[in-house]
Image 1: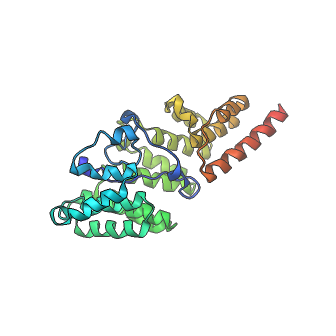
Image 2: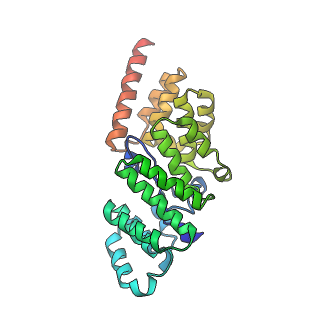
Length: 273
């Protein structure tokens, strides 16, 4: 399973802004995608990986240039390994060099024999096309990725985020209700389900999933803003104000804008009480 770690993940919020949000998790017990993605790993977890197979972790620690130099030097000995081109693509992805990342993902897709590796490359190509706002093309890549490796969680998770982005809440719930997600806890899976139920108007089910999220995670601005909206809709205005006051500001413009709108709603509701 370790060879599958290069899969990337992305949570949508206002056209992919949420990738700039610090969503790194150092407690693997709350990250059901841990075996399929390095992107959400915190510094502590990344440091636990060692050896040539895990050199790519350096790219996630801000050391892409030196890591890519190593990969270039090892071309003759490592270019035939299943994950070589994939790792290079990931290093460019985390550096926001989309065209270079796409080149190496396509090379990985062409060269790989194992369906699992092809699935990872397809998943990552899907995410790149979301970056280009080519939503249908990205969706097609995710569908192909899922078909090649039905047990992988990450492509399904990314598909659910696409559905959430465009308001297909029932489809997002269906994807996240897949048995693949049932055996492990995951903060962002619970948050996504809470989102879906909240926006489709099922406040009772939204509450169930908010209760599954660890209390300290409600300081994360995207979770705080969504939970505050839930509290407003259930008439708990003072509690919503407290949640917003205690949030850790992300600095992500789109999330900040959402928070500001919620604060305006709160100010109005407080006047009415």
